[in-house]
Length: 487
Ligand code: BES
Ligand code: MG
Ligand code: ZN
Image 1 (cartoon, protein in one colour):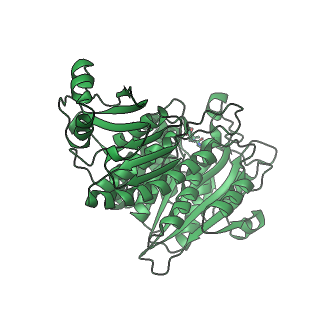
Image 2 (cartoon, protein in one colour):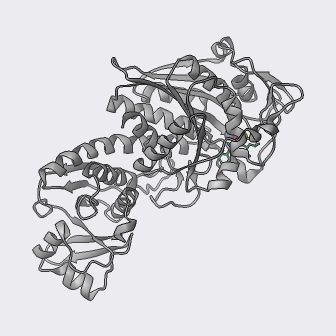
Image 3 (spheres, protein in one colour):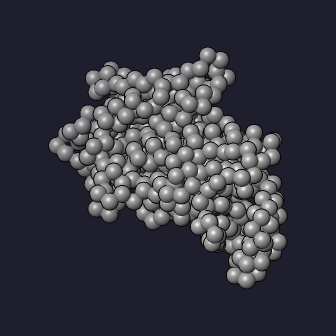
């Protein structure tokens, strides 16, 4: 599908569907909706609003057929003005798209009129919604359920708004593609997606220089923790390092994604219901790989390193065992209390590697704890770190990108349960405060680099369709990471 913007009146673009909008309770539409209303004999105010009692409630769409031409006007309900937001623009656009199979659509620039939101941000959200609305993971289905729309055009005649919105469309296209790529990777069957194929994907698709280290090389790098987690699988672990190095970089960031291509739990085997969706345990990896692709296209003045320690957590005769003591890259010894708390063990070495790159900050993103999922559900991702200002900054960026983050505490006491009799730390200490305890565990593998940890266990994969019309992999994190890095 093509998404573009044209500097024309919405009435001068030939399309099958004309999309306008209405805030709740408005009786006589203003702005572009008003112009369309007048052009079609007040059909919106006299018929849709007065006669049909369309109230403009959020998410409602009145589909008005124009008899002579066979075209349609969609009047989209924006809801209450005071509750309006950028995310709503994205979600509404998804709804419109799903009702426009094979159609050519022209849309008003929602949000940039009476609502007074930034035209660039609005256009980006519409573009993201349009692309997201056509997403389907149907490569294994004989009958495809893809919704395709012929063309989606945003009409904006005002010169200033048009210029800003054009940028929004351009960024939106890159971001939306990155999100869909992450979704594809996460949804992929772990039968085909294992460390080697994930690494191959990164080499071919990250858009930047990508180095893959094999098991021997990982051994040489001293990553005893990462290796232990992967040793139960028939698939060799791979360590992936992607680099984007512009000439005049103003800052240096490392993004680290948890890359467990399947988490069976190891010898502490997961019960069936919990294991079912564990191909999603590389959602952090998918997020950083896709973010790199977007970064390679948006070209910000920031040096970015993306790191993935990819392996499978399987039970077998060669698997690491509860009670084992393993030595991480930093020299810190870890007593394995539970083989299912494997993500933090792999991240321990990935974070240590990131710190050696002498970056200004490190962000890790991981489907790390069921505890975080229980605490926040699929509504918000957990976030914490050793630099409160940066954590808060990331939360604010996330809000602009249309993703929610909720800060979890990192009180020292959460670390108490990690004390070990035989090693420097245990990898887990039980169920209580699990998201924070995992955060404390990770913090012990970072010396002094500002660091943010994002737990997407509850948000990466949803089992019922969310507000954006997405089921299964969501691609969470990609939008915020891109915005945090590239602005
Ligand atoms: N990959 C899981 C966390 C997870 C749970 C992700 C649900 C997505 C949805 C992680 O490796 C794990 O198994 N964590 C354990 C830790 C426990 C043993 C301390 C958990 O949360 O149960
Ligand atoms: Mg696990
Ligand atoms: Zn896991």
